[in-house]
Amino acid sequence: MLRRWCILLAMLALAAGTALTATSASASTTAGTFNPGGTMRLASGASSQARGISNEVSSTNWSGYAGTTGTYTSVSASWIQPIGTCKSGDQYAAFWVGLDGYSSSTVEQTGSEVDCVGRTAEYYAWYEAYPAASENYSNTVKSGDHFSATVTYDGSNKFALYIDDSTQGWSHTTTVTVRGAARSSAEVIVEAPCCTNSGGILPLTDFGTVNITGSTANRAAIGSAGGLTEIYMADSEGRKEDSVTSLSSGENFSATWLRSN
Image (cartoon, rainbow, N blue to C red; front, side):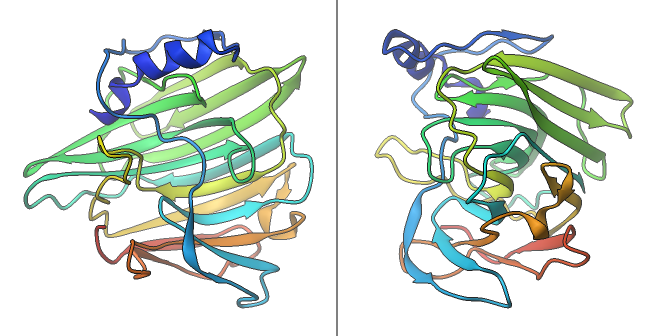
């Protein structure tokens, strides 16, 4: 799995001065050739008014909604883990909530994932305090599971990363310490994780449609967040890889897979 192959870069980041500590029951990681998911990568394309949203941007790895002009202390959302349709090759799709990463160099995040290993879909949940390595939880995850997740800033550089799979009956709260986090964005995201050996974005799993509800930032509907930005994912030719609906009730939206990069 992609998110088990990140420890080498995490060690380099720690050596460079990024401090991270965490306490939680989690699966181990092993060294590998892939990078962690990381921050949003802008793509060439539109940056304009859209459907009443204050801003729209094109990204090669993120889609969803984010508050981008405030100081954020919490973000949360719920979703149903979509099924991955796997035909051939390796593909990846992550669904998460987080603080930072839109215009800053850290991301404090937790979510779920469906990866295709050939024709086999693999499901799991994880947390990450980028640029340190992500960690997978060892609990069972299946398509159709009901997830809720919250990231909260608790002061003194500490973040609480909470995820709950109510279908399987497990939850985790992981505490991480990240010095220098800007807390300049709060986001609810579908992601095509980074990276291939050449630094490119990994192919996006065909996840069908994911329905995301109860999206909040600073304990209010994300639709009322300062600098609300709609993010859409596009490949190197500018073609959308998924479609994102308008927010309903300021909190709810769906994303539908269109193509892999």
